[in-house]
Image (cartoon, rainbow, N blue to C red; front, side, top):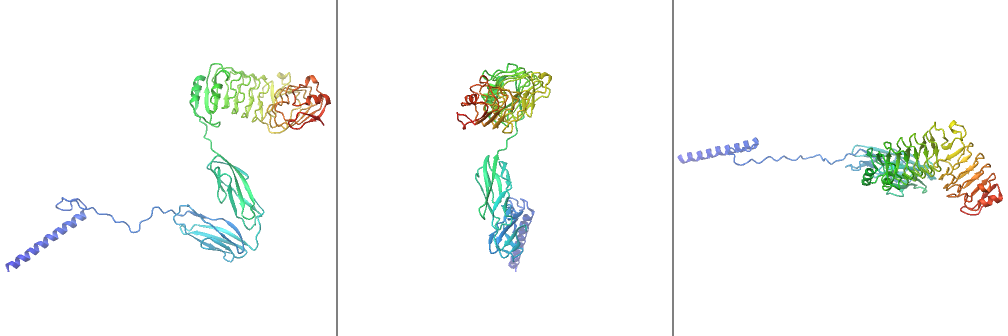
Length: 546
């Protein structure tokens, strides 16, 4: 009996201990502390979070739109596959459904294949599974085909900056032609590409011809595309120097730039503006021909722009002269081909021979009121100069329709007689100049480099034509010389001339008719044959009276 009591006691105690241990383990798990075990020497294993059974995919891209061609034409029994373009191209779900609004006219398959059934029209609709976005194409079905006879584009030429785009729109004739489909091509995809819908994309500087071709009849139309690279705005920094030595050292160290982004330099020099061949700013510029400079000399103290001062400075884009300047020397800016503007002060009195000859970018010039003498051929070959302006209170010179003229000998009283044509702007549009009837003399070099001219009529009021007056008028083919012309200077029509017809209305004495006025034997033929029209073959030496 005692043994049985001992056995039941052991079982009871063991059960109580087991229950207590189980309770401690449960308390430790729920408490979430490292001391969950009352003994506290071993850390409790942390709870691992569970993964949701249906996670949301963060890479899903929603459909925002869809497009198809808006119209098409088919002959009954014909078919066409419509292609849908989903936006954005990276959309995750690209599934679509197709539907015809009038299956008695046209049906559409699950893949977008349209079949023309009978004459009429039907709207084909495509719908996205994601977002229910839709697009429509109106299908016109005819019983017999209408042939394409031609195609045009909304533009024959266009210009784009690199990276720019533009749609070209074709127009097929007749407008009811059955097959309105076209293809597109670019002649130079490195400059511009074109999509199947006519979207032109400018790629890089250059040119390309975009051609649209009709599927029916292979009719074509083209658009010339010019692509340019946008130019950065000019550096607004003004670099100031007090002598040419420092200016030269600075410019020598600068990188090359462009004509549209010149360095803005203010040069305040006290020394004489030496000629380019001796040294000075002109020499500095010529030695840095790929570094374009806009030069402000207004703070300098020199009074004369010396002969040859900036000759052949092709990188000079503009110049502002000091207020104290009174004279501009011979060929001072000869062949400054990038020079677009010159700011001359009111104290300038003399502009010497050929001062701006060959400044092919010069677009505007104003003669100050102070000028009393302008030399020969000052603006010769300035092929961008369309008009010459003169201050209204100048007493020696004036301008009529952009042509530079002098007043007659009593000019300081502003006589209305404008008797000498000093300079005709070489960039003036027009192939035949109108010389005012007040003109009695044509100055030497007056029409120098007027390459636009093809014919000239010298009015009867003119009595003399100066030497080299029409030098380098390379397209001049016909001249009529007025009846009162009594003298013609050396090489007046000789150098650079391609004359093939000359008409003399009057008589010129042999002593006033230089040997080299014309190329070939025209002088001898005229002195022997008198007034009339003389012609020659282009480039020939022999003239014949007609």
